[in-house]
Each structure stands twice: as structure tokens, then as C-alpha cells.
Image (cartoon, rainbow, N blue to C red; front, side, top):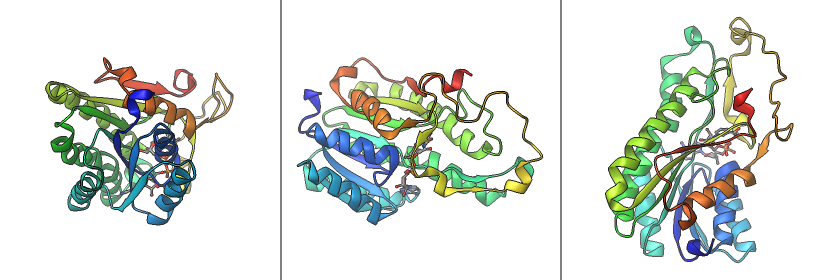
Length: 260
Ligand code: NAD
């Protein structure tokens, strides 16, 4: 999209998966990207991929659940690039996967803080800068908690993902006067590294599973999981002026997985 050229984006979770693919795709269209991630080494790989394509990127190592660290990330981005137009609130974890009776309160808190509180914090600290020229905020939720409730043991994850949609809609309305659009994307299963941050209590999970008739991970459209580049294409559309009349909506990107 031509409208993306010269814009500035901050992407949380930019070191891997959906965040990485989106950063690379936006940079190819002339967006300067600040990559915010817990893991600086992964963010370095994204930065190198962007620079290989003659794009521009910087890195802030930060934990999105920590207000001070995020606030600094926004300050550094605007100090470096002089403005902010696009914010991708995308970092997230699966967290502990366990039946409700076995899930510990601190495990619940970790998932809700990393996925939901971080979304609030990312928007909060972005607003003062986005207000200047208007902008686009994109939030990564999931089909889980919104259309799908069969991911056994993921009550904390699904709750965080459902609440992100409500929060995004509230934000869209609240920020409309500033010409800041807010949209929520709900991917189905996408091949990324997120499974490596999943801690299933496997023995406990067996007792709550209800057998489903279709094979896990089956997708009507492509018969396999989606990939991060397909999600990046939606993120780029929502970041660009091509979606100038779209705000406060959730978009499912799942090859009809959630309709089974
Ligand atoms: P991923 O693990 O490949 O990438 C996530 C990135 O976020 C990693 O680089 C990780 O270091 C970073 N991160 C995690 N916690 C962080 C924190 N506290 N502070 C800063 N950075 C942190 O996973 P992904 O699949 O690309 O996930 C991105 C988003 O997509 C998540 O919100 C996830 O819930 C959502 N999602 C993923 C899928 C899927 O199937 N992969 C489906 C639906 C939604």
C-alpha cells in the first residue's frame, strides 16, 4: 500500500511469528519499525531480515506487562523516528494449559497480564503520540474465546483473548475523535513458535477432554494451519489507508477453522 510509505510502527512480539512476519511485510512497504520483544536476540533476527530488504528497524527489549518498560519503548521510538502511526499490540503467550481446578491463581495472572493488561498498556502509552496525526492500532486476539471454546485447559488464554476484543471496541469508540482506528484480528492456528511457551499439565487434561469428531488442526480451506505471512497481509491492510473506514471490528483469519 502506497499510504504506508514513510509511516512509523511499533510492534510488540516483533521477534517471532506473526509479529515478525508483519514487521518484515510493513518494512517492505516503507514503514520504519520498532520491534519490542522480551527476547532481544529474536528481535535482532527480525531486524536483520528487514535490513536485508533495505528496510529500517530498531529494537527495544521490553516486557509488555511492565508499564515503565513499555512507556520507554514508545518514547525511544518517537525520539528516533519523530512520529508514530501504527501500533501492533501482538505479543502474547499460551501460558499454562490446565483444567480450571488445577490452574493456579498466579498462572491465571501471568496469562491475563501478558495478553490483556499488555494490550491496555500498549494502547495507553501509544495514544499521546497517535493523537498528533491519527493512526491505526491492531490487536492480536484469537478465535479462542470468541468463536472457539474447545481448546481444553485454555480458560485463562481464551478469557484474555475475549477481553481483548471488548477492550479494542471500547478503544475504537473512545479514540474515533482523534482519527485513531482500532481493530482486532482473530487468527486460527498459525505456524509460529507460540507452542514453545505452552505449559500443558497433560495428565490433568485427559480427564476434561471431550472427543471431537474432526481431526485437530483441520482447516476447511487449506487442510493445514495458516502461516504468519497470511496474517501479516491482513495487518498491513488494517495499518494502511485502504481500511480507512474500518474501526472497532474483529476480523477472523482462520480458513474457516472456527466454523467447524
Ligand atoms: P510467537 O511465540 O512466535 O511470538 C510471540 C512473541 O512475543 C515472541 O517473540 C515472544 O518473545 C514475545 N513475547 C512474549 N511475551 C512477551 C512479553 N511479556 N513482553 C514482550 N514480548 C513478549 O507467537 P505468535 O503465534 O506469533 O503469537 C503472536 C500473537 O498471536 C499472540 O498474541 C497469540 O496469542 C496470537 N495468536 C496466535 C495463534 C497461533 O496459532 N500461533 C493463533 C491465534 C492468536
